[in-house]
Length: 281
Ligand code: GUN
Image (cartoon, protein in one colour):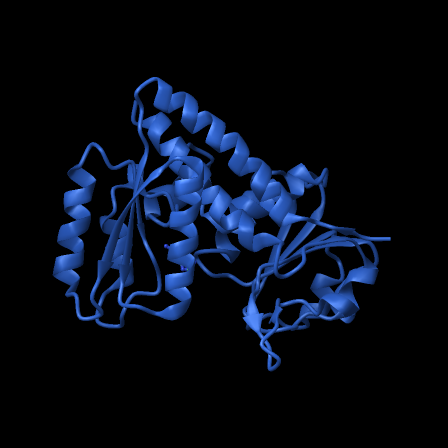
């Protein structure tokens, strides 16, 4: 029998813990504020931004909302970020991605003060993760490590395989698993014979962005499978990068979609915001 890793429940527990912490900080006169910037109105981004603001409200973090028009110039956005960098009342700055094509995403991310980069995307924070010093860690991979730890899954010494090498998930995921003493392999679009590698995995993290890409032929009997993907299929139902029905019976534990990794990303963003306030004291 396999364990379904309940990201909804674990993320709720974390939010309760953070809520208590924030209430204590408030009683001592410490407020936490997160600036949330969205440029344009991509429907998926609007849903994510709404969920992030709702989580802030639940935990007791002030969210400062900046909804900018699609035709906002790069200069205008950079100037807003600089203003927020200077503002002592702002602890964290989040720019929802993707940005419209005329704006250089990389330049925007690198303009955010690394001490306020609660997404953990700034090179300084990625570098800190790489060398093992303190910094913000990208929320989705941090959420996955937290899910594994809170589910009692041992990482140390295990064969960990990550499918996908994005800056937001794949690369920081590999670094985090390494930090936990896993033996890590990263597979990507140019990997030859991917199944031969994934079949060695004790822990398989799938972040490839293709619906139901992984079936049971990729998975070693008794492996732990973490699914980062989220897609809508032809019947408008949500599904992940993993074919859950076919893969689950061969695992010892697996994350579902929805209700697995997704809710953890927002819980970790809230965690990073609380951390930002603690660091600014
Ligand atoms: N777009 C998709 N995922 C993310 C995320 O984690 N942070 C931001 N800022 N934008 C995203």
